[in-house]
Length: 511
Image (cartoon, rainbow, N blue to C red; front, side, top):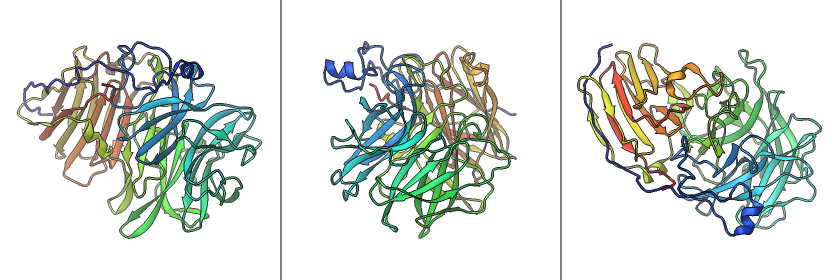
């Protein structure tokens, strides 16, 4: 390939302030009751190697699926699968964090812990505006899987904005004698005047749809199954049934996380587009599965409830193939950047696009714009002080191109654009940084369709201390991958087609 330009530049230094912790610790007693929030020097916490600077992470210990996501009076509540006692999976509870801008998060004490019915697995939360359950108007009610000898569904309610919950005395609300029901996602369906619950069937590879008028007594309405010949044995989890207005009509999308059976290996989230009549979801005839994200590390994602017409999505940035082995301490796992799901048309068919939410503008600095000249090795940030950044690249699709992110230790992530086949490939191999922690982590070629009809490709690349999120054409394609370089990639090179580029540092949410 012909290369362009030889130019070196640096973006203004940002974020030199030391990183402080953003956890609420009310008193010493609170620390004892919540072992996930304990003493840790403020000059170390959130400044560890690989600690994300623009993604949510718990202060310490294990985290997986986002749970109970609900928007109330200007505040986004994020509950999450959490082990408050260790940095590996176990003792599953609901951690809790809140935000008013989807960027800065305040971590609260653990909200719901295990009881005699078992661990607290994934689920959702609703605001019971009209007191259908009898706990009071506008009560926050959590619906979750109690995982003991069986996986059953339970509820708990909060009258203090999710800080504490009281379990319903007649749990479980849906009894079961096996592990084939999990991850209840509940919403109010105005047309049928009832609560709708989607339950995953795990290894039975289906979704159950239940209805209730009071959140306590439930009736099974239907099942959704769909043959996926190239994935004959996968586990279905974490469903989310959401509606969109598109060209004057309502469309429904069913998200389903699958593991194993993701786009490449391990964990991934697929979706179906169709209709819902209050009882049954029917998928359009399409070549399924369709994928929310083509990378290795976007799983169990669901949307916030109570947000009106806006569909804000968050995923767990990890993969069960190596989740417990990634080199993070004293925390393990982060969430993706929040995305706003939208229906878009591609080649005459609808797909989900997932651009990063507009709130990113609140922590992003000024763009620095550059034109390609002859070669293209750019020093894009000052790695000593800048903690994360966004690259926006517009590149012609008349020839193949190579994009390389790298640092001074020669760690590098290579992204190839196959113009004729409209394909993007990321190479996550031993050259990207640490990789020896798991033989499943190295995936030498991660492919994705560009999902664009334009002659010029727009790429947004968000780089943090241990992740790279690539979005094409305003989110029509998303690829999320963990990486563990010795220091953040602070240089960028581009070769092949003509392009324009702009870069902006993003302020640490911990500063």
